[in-house]
Image 1 (cartoon, rainbow, N blue to C red):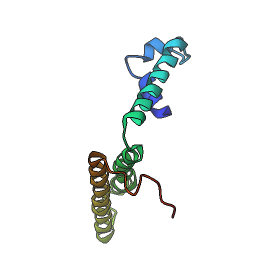
Image 2: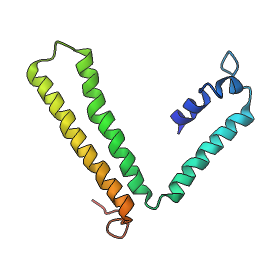
Image 3: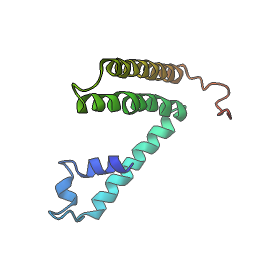
Length: 128
């Protein structure tokens, strides 16, 4: 939650109401109100989501696909532009395609399970 709080507190709307020029907090009441509202919104999402684990699967498949497959390879290709051998470029792009396919598959399966209302086998987590 810390990154979300920092983004909200440093937004144009709240930055000058919360902090002075040196970065010290000048309005703790507003700061704690913002944080409590954010916790309340997250609580409402968790409470109203029928199967929260499916919601976490949905978000996780999107974020992990981007952070685990697309972003590292894109940064590598950008950093070493023109110096990456052809075979390695092909392998990198194949990894992006395969990772995106499986991430999209996880996203679609989670979305399908959320809207179908099923929770799997009784809703319990199976031990490996």
